[in-house]
Length: 212
Ligand code: Z5A
Image (cartoon, rainbow, N blue to C red; front, side, top):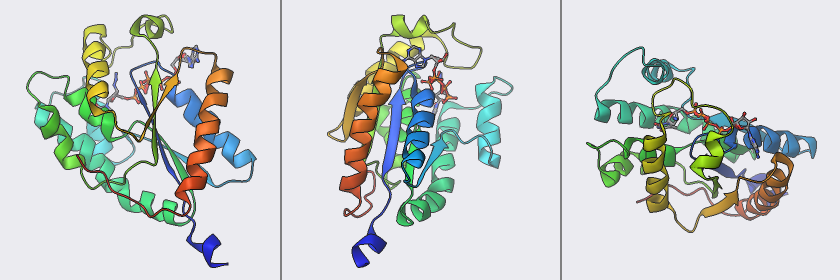
C-alpha cells in the first residue's frame, strides 16, 4: 500500500568522545535490526575508503600535515560525497546507523585553537539531519581505562576534554544521552529501545536537513 511505499528509514547517529563504545553498539544495533527483519546498514565517518577519505586517513595517522581549515573541510566533504547514497538508502526504507557524523566534525576541529565553532558548523548545514543523535557519555577517566590512547592524532586527554565541552555546545532536542559506562549488554538494551521508537516515528516524517 501507499503508506508502506512511502515509509523511509531513520538516520541514527552515534557520537561521543573516544572509547565510549560507539563502534561496538553500531555493530550490535545493525545486527539486532537485521535479525528482526528490518533493513539497516552501518556507516562510519570518516569513510576512509574514498579518495577524500584516503587523505583524511593519512592525516589522522600523522603521515602528512594539513592546514586546520583545509582538513576540516575535507572531513565535511567526505560527508557530502556520501550524501546522495545515504539519501537513496533512507528513501528505500533502509535505516542508517552512523558511527560519528557532523558533530564529530565540529567538536574535534573546534577543539583546535584557530577554529571557531560556528565557522566549523557552516559547511555542515544542509546534510541530512539525524532523526536522533545518541550521545555516549562516559567519563574521560573511565574511557581511558578501556585501553591506552592510540597513536592517532587527537588521541590525547587534554584534547578530548575540549571535545567534550564542544559536544555540550552542540546538543539539541534531537539528542539522547546514553550512559555508556554500563555493560555492553545494558547499553545495548537502552539504546535499542530508543532506536525502535525513532525508526517508527521517522517512517511518516519527511527527510530533514541540518541547520545551525
Ligand atoms: N573526526 C574528526 O576530526 N572530524 C570528523 O568529521 C569525524 C571524525 C567524523 C577518527 O575517528 C578520528 O576522526 C576521531 C574523530 C575524528 N578522533 N579521535 N580521537 P574514529 O571513528 O576512527 O575513532 P575511533 O577511534 O572511533 O574509535 P573510538 O571513538 O576511540 O572508539 P568507540 O567507537 O567509541 O568505542 P569502541 O571501539 O566500541 O570501544 C572501545 C573499547 O572499549 C574496546 O576495547 C571495547 O571493547 C571497549 N568497550 C566498548 N563498550 C564497552 C562497555 N560498555 N564497557 C566496557 N568496555 C567497553
